[in-house]
Image (cartoon, chains in turn brown, purple):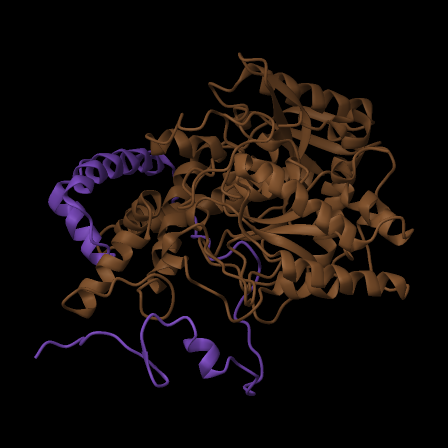
Length: 492
Length: 96
């Protein structure tokens, strides 16, 4: 048998069901692995060992009584942007360093009902603003495949925790690619559900019209299991959709005969890494050999504008959402000033990192009197065009496939001084958030680095809104045929 | 498009973020580059296109106006940097 820590969520759950291991054993083993690896990887910001062991004992009781479901008792990690009652939640920012939420996010409540064991809260770019994990106020996370490189971001710690065998699954959030891009760079599966599928209640807001919570796992089936546990209508999120969630995980399998696959040309961007291109093209050919019909000539001409649209809309929404951090209600507060305004402005000066301030300023400018029409309104109109082109494409194709990121994992420090260069790493994932579609990243091979490291590459699959079933069916068939999901990084 | 240091200071004031002298210069350069990048949208023909308000076909969401459980004052105030009784405490807002 493979090492316990490299099992998939489904395999670990099967051990628990057969009573060959207990949740307490899995949980203790996970903390031992964290103790051994995380000084180097830095995937976690907060560990919740006592609480996890109590949850594990409860899960073991459920399992002993023949109760529990596919997630019961399997240890997981949660991005530190998701509120956990009684457990510090920082969003990777100094401004929330002392913040202990008084309530749970809806996804946490749902996971609790499913027999949750939380190992801890994971590292991330501050307020989910970043593509490398390097914007965390608590220091960067390292890529388990190549520790001198980034794991991707903003859900850097969640991706690394799953990739390094520290957690069996993790939750992240995806506003412009923050689940799919780190999943791709870290060699794990990452899903961004359709906007409105998963309640945002208790998710610390960044771009409210774009944010979605989703899972990181080691297999497509595992992602389907976590998706089913967290998806569904929630009255406390006014953008939550009242749509039934189908039983996807138990219906996976079968070939792809007759599946219509479109390949949008615009996503194979100029300057794209050759090894990434080869891995993605090979994966698409494999879909063909599984019975899918491939159209290589699809065009989504407005997609190249998505990056500019995103960097207007997301900072605009962020500048409003982050107005709440004023040093009055919670979090870090500067208190030595002469007036309330001075305290507030200094709280935000010392509490926010540079990228967060940069985006607040961009958003404030884009929404300010005289500029609103030229920036925000224009961006929302182009957004309509982007969505319209996707809608038209999905009349002809069941899924669209593309790269996730134009490059594999880059070195720590390589892009930090040039914000626009960093923004370009999200060029293939951003249009999906702009249009509110579901998207998944599935491991599809490796790009060799000059120093011999194997850098994971992900295949991105997109489907029409609320059609996660087709997304998973395609991803599962590919994954099982290609076999990359069984690859694990060398021990650090 | 070039943002002057005065414009950067003005935006920072609107956003209620104090920025240091050393940051102003850097922000002026970086924000100008970002705004330049946005200019490409001006070439997109959006004549007659309505702006996206929402990617879902959702409209106003209503529920019955019935009280539901909410957080206790102690829970709400537990994170307050400074409090006085059941209130958040701040320095004087209005000048004398």
